[in-house]
Length: 223
Ligand SMILES: [Fe+2]
Image (tube, rainbow, N blue to C red; front, side, top):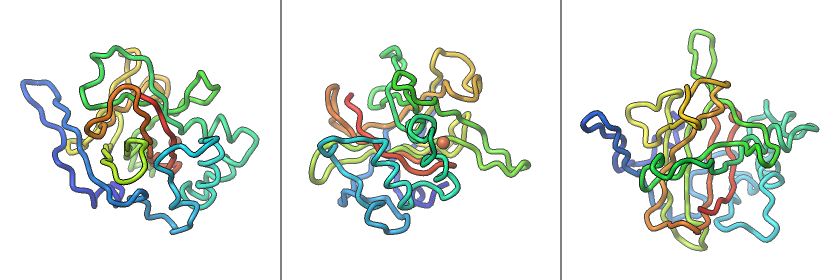
């Protein structure tokens, strides 16, 4: 698991009762607006805004921050290449799929990555395969914070494995269309991520998330 996650104290993880999975949001309070970034120390990497700056462009922002260290060196040719915007950077930006309201537990938000309506590639997911030396491909953590200035509560969801979340994980998965989560290269995977207390429909939140193989990405969504 990412060492940044290990340092976090989670209130509680998953509890199982009567055969049903009960989700309990894990919340951490960050005094710093940029807490959690341990990469490089480059100013461009550390400078993660808490509210969308005027003219916010998540593609440009994540390209700059990625080149400064938030995205692995091996992926930089892809994000900087001719298909970088939609097939690589856009593929890692969050969007909210249309799902039935009762499919999302209270206190959670359903997220997917790579909005096809924007022409972005849909993000695949893959399991770890130690025998093949494959790290796996999924989002290992998602942090959600109200897009407000100053100190605010930030909820962190951790995912230690895919296609099933680990026993101690604070995030969970669902499937878009209720099919097999592994179908279509795992592209129908929905991430159920904890919301900070007090956020409500209409609020804008910052989504800061980490793809195991492709690094960190930041964007804002309105609930
Ligand atoms: Fe990825």
